[in-house]
Image (cartoon, rainbow, N blue to C red):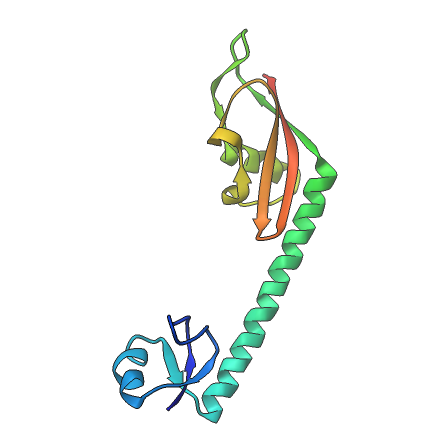
Length: 149
């Protein structure tokens, strides 16, 4: 029986592969668990249309992330003002949420999950290098300067 895999199945194939399996395996395991669908002309056509649509969505996201990377690379440095003691220790800390908020003020929209700070937060005044992982291979570094309020 020919089927189209809806997801990766161990020892069988990747999502989208058309494979031959025994009818009982398809009926009793793959179909009930929504791991596969029957490979007829109609289902193959629908699956290919879905694949093309999802590919376009991914390309749009990657284009958006490249634009964000260009904006971050052009920015290079932002200043954040925070309350601190005389010896430079912050009252509280600067975390990814605060960085994202300050970037949003200047028109750069980034998700806080994409911000990577060493030790997850900043506790002292100074300049810090912050990594932005926007997508698998799209990364940017900017400097965050923490200044006293």
